[in-house]
Length: 418
Ligand code: AMP
Ligand code: MG
Image 1 (tube, rainbow, N blue to C red):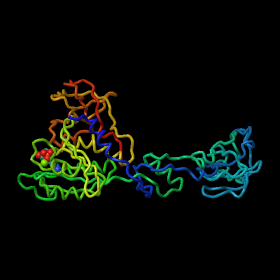
Image 2: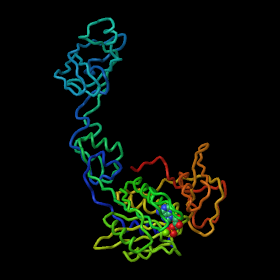
Image 3: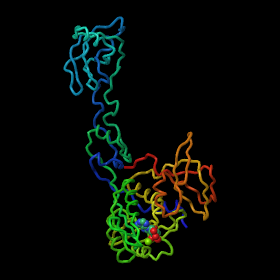
Image 4: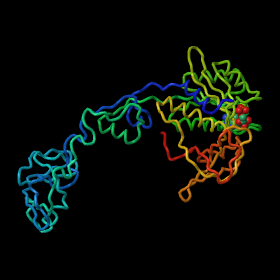
C-alpha cells in the first residue's frame, strides 16, 4: 500500500506547469499571471481632489474658523475629467469635484461642508467669493500623483492568481490582456459495462453514469477544461479507442475498473498503454487507483485512474486530481483549508487506512462541530452531496469518540477557484 502523501508526490512529479497564453483580462479570472507587470504610468496620473469642495492654497486659510471665515475669490470650477486653465493664486479658490486634477498653485481642498457655500446659495449671496470655515493643512483631501501605483514600479508579480482586484489593477494600468498559464484540458472517461448514458431510459441491470459528471464538474470547479469522452465499455477495443481520443488533452482521468478482483479489462489496457502503476492507496474510501503516463505515438499524457464507486472517485479526485490540476495551472497552494472540529459521532478505523469521513461542519458558540452525513458506504453519493467537509482519521488512530477533536478538510469554505 502507498500512503496518500507518496501517491500525491508521485502524481505531482508527473505533471508540469503548462505554458502561458495571452488573453483578455476578464477571461483570465482565476488564472496565474505568467509575467511580472510593471506600470508605465502613475496612478493617479496627477494630484487630484478626494472631495467635492474648493481647491485652495493652505496658507490662505490660516486662522479660518466658523466665526472668522477667510474669504477667497472663486476664479473657476473644475470637474473630474477636465483640467483647470486657471491657477489658484494667492487669495483665490477654484471650485473642484472629486477626482478632478488639482489646479496649479493649490495644495489643499476644503470640502463644501467646511465652506459657507450652502448659506450663500440659500441667501442668494455672492458666489464669486467663498468663505472658508476651517484651516486647511497642505495636502488635505488631495490624492497624490502615483500614490496608488508609481510609474515604473512592479505592480503584480509573476505567479499571482488573478482575482477581481488584480483584474481591476490590470485595467487601471490600461492592459486589455494578460499573460497567464493556460487552463489544462482534462479528458474524463467512465468505464464499465453497467453504465448507461444519462439521457437514455435506464435499462434493467444498469446504472446511470454519474462519475463523468461529478469528475467533470470538479475539473471545471478547480480551473480545468473538462472534455467528456463518454463511457468506455469493458473491452480492450472500446477502451483503447477512448484513451486514444483523450491523448491530446493535458490529463486523462478514468473512473472504474482498477480494483482487485474486477474482471474489468481497464487495468490491462492502462498497463498496456503506458507506464501505469496500479496502486492500493492507504485511504478509505478510495483504496484502488492507477496512475502513470500514457504513451502513444510520441504523446505522453498523465493518467489518473480513479475507483468506480462514486464517493471513492470524488474523494480520490480531491486528494490527487485537484492538486494535479492546480499544479498545471501554475498554482502553488494545493492544500484544502483544514480546521479542527469536535466530532459528534464515533468512528472506528478497522484496517489502518486513512479515513475521509463525510461530515457537515457547523459552528456553535465559537467552536466547529462535525457530524457524519449518514451512512458512509462508498456508493452513497448523497453522503458527499450532504457534506461540506471530510473528517480525516489518521491511519494509526483506531477509534475516535464523540467529543474528540479531529481535523476536517473543508470541501466548501466559501473559497472560489473559478
Ligand atoms: P469498479 O471500480 O469499476 O469496480 O466500479 C465499482 C462500482 O462503482 C460499480 O459497481 C458501480 O456501482 C460504480 N460505478 C462505476 N463507475 C461508475 C460511474 N461512472 N457512475 C456511477 N457509478 C459507477
Ligand atoms: Mg467497472
